[in-house]
Length: 384
Image 1 (cartoon, helix red, strand yellow):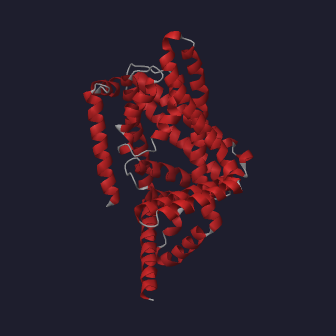
Image 2 (image 1 turned 120 degrees about the vertical axis):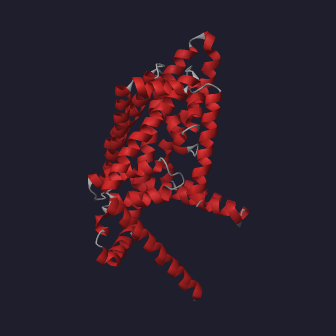
Image 3 (image 1 turned 60 degrees about the horizontal axis):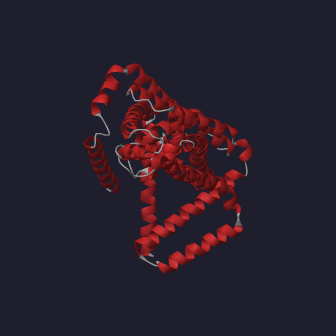
């Protein structure tokens, strides 16, 4: 029910945002239609690029699994990546559900298929996933996978933004734009430093003690109610993040492959947006896309519409304007890339979901049975 409500809210947000963009003539629907009709080969190339991005994301995740010595087949990781991305684009607020499917497919859910031994298999799976080492490794892989991606994008953004800033600041007629760009550059630098510092902070006993004291202080101020739950959840997530980073940062010398795959993801994502702008006959400089990709990717994590439709186009218009790119070019190109990505990745995700249908049904059945078991245990405890 909560997922349905979130879906409706985000859908309405997307509709309102798109209406605003159309009303302000920031997005031209006819130009988008023409791009699909007259540049079919270019649209197909963009679709292939978006699928390739997902493939390199899979390679990055698989390389991290090998670093953490988690054994699984590549085809399972590939299916998990495309299915979770395909579902995740359309089902806001369902990250826990997606993670169940992703982990199940990744670890090889074919073990669920023997229904006669289902109870025995459920016990084995429960015992395996309950092991602290495996849970810690999986958490570390997921978190570090995201952090590496963001770090590489911020690195590109920092280098290219600095180059563009010095170019603009040398022009006396563009001092105001240079000052606006300076704020963007500082934000990118701070985010980059923050991620670089995480491995050191996660190992610092002083920092962990300070964090623990802040947690106790906030919980003392908000002893009950909704805020208390949010604070507990927030600090739990922060501590989980730091624990995962501690686990991963001990093997930094092995991370060259994930970083390489992240670089490929960034370059291909930027190429997809660049070709989208060409398809709309409103070309955006490739270096500007490289400079903005990090902030746009971080913004895409926010709940700003179904698959980011509407909200992301508004953010793109604002961010690209700092680099003297028209809102029309930025928003329309971003929307075209988003549309192609939705169609391409969802199509491949559906294909993998069909191929893995028995596994997914078994995973969901196992999850449902586990919830019933947990509910029964809770009622037994209450009865006692």
